[in-house]
Amino acid sequence: AHGQQVRGHTLVWHSQNPGWLTNGTWTPAQLSQLMNDHIATEVGRYKGRLATWDVVNEPFNEDGTYRQTLWYNGLGADYIAQALTAARAADPGTKLYINDYNVEGVNAKSTALYNLVKSLKGRGVPIDGVGLQAHLILGQVPSSMQQNIQRFADLGVDVQITELDIRMQLPSDSAKLTQQAADYKAVMNACLAVSRCAGVTVWGFTDSDSWIPSTFPGQGAATPYDENYAPKPAYHAIAESLGGTTTPPPTGACTATYSVTSQWNTGFTGQVRIACSGAALSSWKASWTFGAGQQLTQAWNASCTQSGAAVTCSNASYNATVPDGGSVTFGFNGSWSGSNPVPVVALG
Image: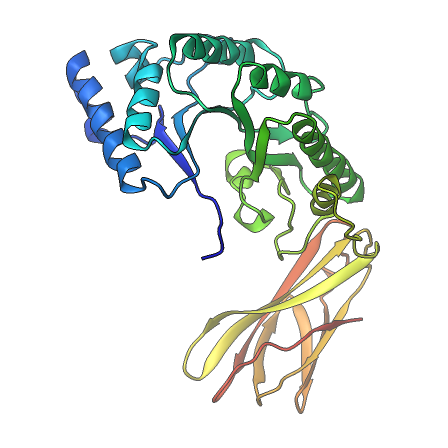
C-alpha cells in the first residue's frame, strides 16, 4: 500500500538448513534438483513482488577460498551459477544478488567475490548486484570501502549495503555515540559517491531488537535508534548524508519512559526507565499523575508514594547514579478498573 520495497533473504546458505537436508546422503543430481525445486518454489511464490533476492549468501571464507558447505561439497563452485540461473527463471523481473560479510573493503575475501562476479558476468550468468553486509565495529570502517564499491560497479553490477550495524563495547557514552555517527556517515558517503550503489539497509533499526548483544557478549548499541526508539546521533548523521536538515535533540538530556509490562483484570505491572545521553544524574525523582484512578500497591528499585492521583518515585540508595549513556529501571504493581492509560513522566 505504501510502495515499500522488499528484499528476499536468502535462498542458498550454509546455515539454518533443515536437518533432513543437512543429514541426508545425496547424489549430485539429487542435490541439484533439491536446490532447483527450492528456488523455483520460493521465488515463484513471490514472483513480481520482490525488488531483490539474496540468492547466495556467504559463499567465501576469510582467506578468499570457497566455504565448505553442503552445496559446494556436493556440486562444486558452480552451485552459485546454477542458483542464479534458477532464480532468474523463477522471476525474470527481480534483481539477483550475492551477499557476504567482511567484504566491505578491499581484501582477500572481497577480491575473491570480485573475481567470481567478473567470471559470472563473462559467462553470461545472471547477476545484478553484490550485497556488502557491513556488520562493522566502532572506528573500523574500511578506508577502501568506496574504492571497493566502485570496482564492483565497474563490472556492471549494482552494490547495496545490506545489513549495516556498527557495534561498540558497552556501555555506550557520548564519545562512542559521536564516533558511531561519524562511522555511519562514512558508510553512507561511500555508497553515495558511487552511482551504482543502490541502497543501504540497517540490520534492525533499534538497539532493543539488535542481534549483536546475544552474539557478541558485552557489545551492542549498534543501530541508529536506542532501546526506547529514540534516534541516536547516528540517525542524524544518516539523515545529513542524504541531504536532510534534521537537528539533533539538545545534548545533556535525561528522559523517563513509562510502560505497562503486563496487565490483568484487576491489576497491572509497570516500569519506568530513566536514560541519559550527553548528561548524567547523581540522583533522580520521577513523578506522574494517573488519569483513571489507578493505585500503586508495590514498588521495587525505587521509593514511591501516592497522594490522590499524583505519584512520586525517588532513587534507592544503590541506583541513584545514571551515567552518560546509561540507564536505570524501577518497577511497580498497581490496581486499575475500566482503563489504564499510560501517563507522561516528569523527571526531576
